[in-house]
Image (tube, rainbow, N blue to C red):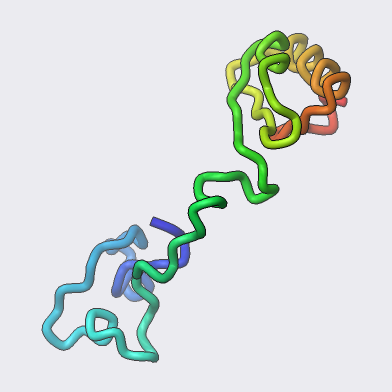
Length: 113
């Protein structure tokens, strides 16, 4: 679940994790949906179909590991995320190729430029 929805009582006790669980108590304000209680997931919180699963920048994420994978991408709708196992030398060549093809890199650092 999202960080917006906290488990009931997680702020009171250390042993209760914040990960969402449905409140089931008979007197639970959160289960009843009372205004002062913490919010619970509902259908109304869902994002629009066109935006679902996209990066906050509005691009579709594509995980890449080699510079040749950039050639198959559409720079208008897709942005690249370099895999965590890619080393420095190849990461540098990927960032150069992305700049050449005008493709946005989502996890580029200052060292890569």
